[in-house]
Image (cartoon, rainbow, N blue to C red):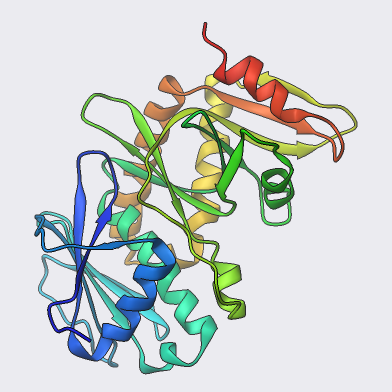
Length: 289
């Protein structure tokens, strides 16, 4: 494996990360690149992700860094320099659950590093004509079933995690992240292309019902629903943060959720197991107004 192996990870239309690994973790980088659909590149961007070994005392950083994690994965973040160091233990090479924990920590690490412009959601992504609608629900709440039911020209590139990023023009875009539960099972052949960026048109909070209907949420309720989905996406990883830093990140995410709810409509989506709920999305969210 080449010692200058390097990839580009896009997180918005305007910002990319250069992803590299120390020699002892080339295997992790190569597998991660396959799962995320990353392209090898010689371009070097100011924002950086470095994959390193996880030792009992590693990563050890100065006060400019925030470090959090578990024996299965750690991150060190330098927000000013836009630099993220991932600590990966040796066990991740043979233990699929440990490997999956590293992938999840990478997602949370990126969203934390970019907490001034991004939000990690526990939601499925539905796409039609290049435009995205998020469907949020608790685990077991029907996200995957909903994602599998949409007919062409709809499709769902991801059913568990996604990163919503605001660009320099105040518009929101979605990047799909992997389904960690699938990775943890060791089922091969799965990958999630996170490179495409889909303009975000609406967010639906899903509940099962006896009839299909959609209704717009009042602003205050929308903020509560958004922050709940954000909490579900990262609550375990955030529990490992220092309390002052955790509070700072939560405040930034709350502020971003407030801005998002003003720009992007949030809906309550009631869906049956046999109805054509996607037609509601087309008429209420994607239709030109």
